[in-house]
Image (tube, rainbow, N blue to C red; front, side, top):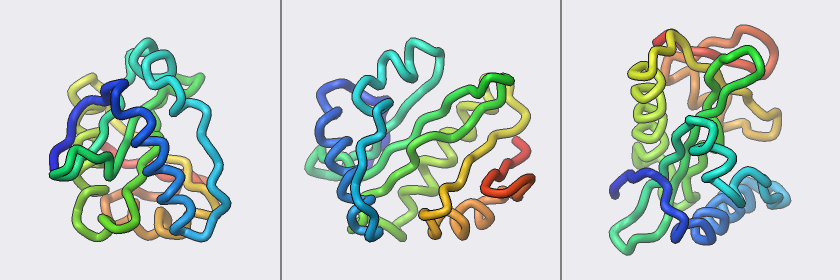
Length: 141
């Protein structure tokens, strides 16, 4: 497994991975519009986006960061392909995003938890995140 900065040639494979990950959770897969154009939704706004690749150069995970209207940095689109969960990929993607935020001068990082993503309510606290209002967590960097 390797993690790289998103490249456009992986867009369709990444979108397929995200939809598959949602389907595996029993959710009706719905496309997140920002994933259609990573360049304008992340890179052009000064925010990174990474993908994890398996040994066959297939996308098995992704994560990015975004800024809210108040300048707080938020994790965005952390997904891991179902067959690769519980192998540390999500943790490695999360660590990379946190380190990037820290290097860019942020003192904390936030995440919005969807009600339907029950796994995220367990995952983030294991990585030091604390709830500060309903469905929102943050971590001091």
